[in-house]
Amino acid sequence: MSSPQGLLDPAEAVIVFIDHQPMTLFGVHSHDPQTVVNNTVALAETAELFGVPVVYTTVAREGVGGDLIPGLKEVFPDQEVIDRSWINAWEDPRLKEAVLATGRRQIVIAGLWTEMCVAFPVISALEEGREVFVVADASGGASGESHAMAMDRMVAKGAVPVTTQVVLGEFQRDWARQDSYQGARAIARKYFGNWGQVLDYYAQTTATRDGGTDTDDS
Image (cartoon, rainbow, N blue to C red; front, top):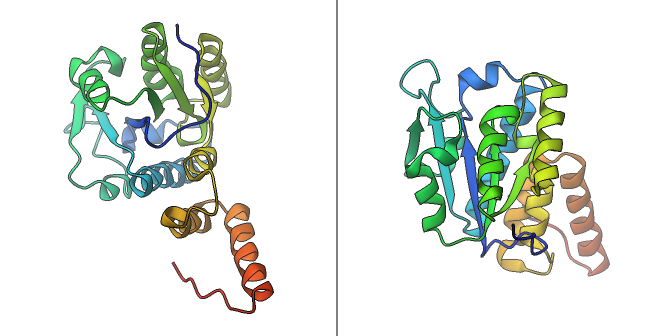
């Protein structure tokens, strides 16, 4: 099994969103459901900002599962949604082919529920020697214990645990990167509470120091 090659690189990453649907969200008790929704949409917006391809997949979408949660589909409205019956999404040839077709070596996965629909494909991809990152706070389990045990199991297999905020930070890497700075700051302001406030404060103090004003309202 290959070992992770370091920090996330937006030129090498693909993000897989698994079963972020009403039915599965109803069963999340490891996190506040609204927080999971916010982090999931923030992760999608981060992918859009940095040009990272995404894969959307659902289970029983036309039946009890329901469509993708509000906000997620709107980020990539033309993205195909792979609806499947497999609990382990990696065993669905369409999803696996969609991920590998991107040519990206870093597979970033978030989903509901952590203990099954996230853990199973993560473990399967790791067993094939893939480099896999799990976004813990854009995922959720049936209980705090089941989420924690699943995260421990995946990490023991070689997965790298991250949070949504970490993904944004690793993609941005340098606040001097002006092509993505304002977009990254807007995502932080919208979703990440104190971190967004820190970036706003930094911008204001920098503008004051330089004799200007911070007029960004994005």
